Length: 576
Image (cartoon, rainbow, N blue to C red; front, side, top):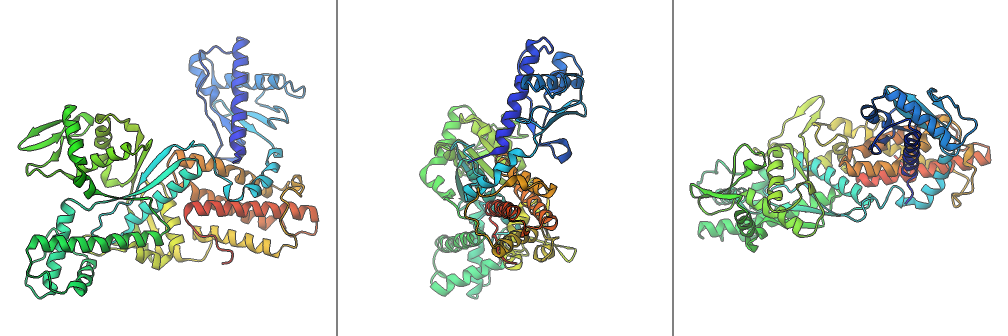
């Protein structure tokens, strides 16, 4: 698919390299290798379409001030274009660099070069967007690299809470981003259906079962106190009654766990599907135990010299990976730890052929990252192929007060309750608005507000407004090329065109940096520019040619806004 910004960035990069090589040949600059300079889009419009730090990077090697280097680059940009109208004074801080390439190039600050492209290239954009439609923004950048993303992976002992919800929105949006950027993506949920939490789950279920049958038993201190456990046991009792009252305790717990896990996992799947999240793989931890995968992984680490025995337990030398102390892999009772299972699981991921593995974990797993990367290195895998995104906590607020949550006591708002309260669109948009490493305060009142203060409402309103304009149009937009786009000269029109051009590159950059929050910012900025355009430029003007050009610009904006909202998992209403 087309990516005009990437093409222009390549052109700017090529011209800089050409000017640098020319300066070296002339003896104006002395450097060994071409510097690894950046060509970036400036944050401020006044700084041009692109900027480069090439002069700053060369300063140390050439022993010249960056601005002097920038002046030399600028002079060679001019001469390589053979533009007779260009300034021949190499000390000039501003120059036209040829209409076919740049409108002008300026030296700014300590030695940055700012490139201004003019508007001519933007007029080719609208027909391309309309032609590509749902494919606009997509690219083959990732070249089909196989990526697995594991996210949420909540213990199936309770209901999904706000932290799980944030992980679901971030993970699913990141998957959408990577797919749009040309990666082959697999979404996975790791079911923690083995280990201590399942033992405690079984004890909790058993205690509630016996209590509901009138037995005087204490509830385990380490048990799960949520009301949903009682509801789960009542459903099981409706099916089997007191049939498991007199059976052996281990058999009773095994049955209750099996039935409860079926219900809990089904509820998790249903809630996530309602939230717009569908997984490719649901991976059971128990299968790692049953298949012998954990034993195999431990043996392999033992053979490589990373495991030793102490006090009847097997320990992994995680201090070699930067950990403060070594970690137990197999307890003295012969049972493997959760850490051992997790290592075997990650080895399994790479054995399945994934070239990159991405995990979204809570910030409380921070200490687990280095030891897991170290374990992968010990097993012979490139630890950089494992990427972990740490996600900070979510705080709910309502009427200016923080809503307290405690999963252990059962006092927390579930994902299902949140969707009932604010809807899927607001929930997904709000959860992705901030970088994962930032704490998020979720304002329940704002999420329900129908005003420009509510960011998701603001963006969706822009889409609905566009649909209303197009519906009222006397023209049918069947021929995207049948318009003179050079008539689009107002600042609001040019700004909108420039933002549309950024979309494919925005997807790539957000995908590569694992920053799905960039999409919400882009959507809000695009909506804002459209509202500004609508307020300053009459779309359904009496001037037929201008009306056609503006209507097609509006249609291109609708397509782009729809595409970014779909990546976010947010609906695109045609009326509000």
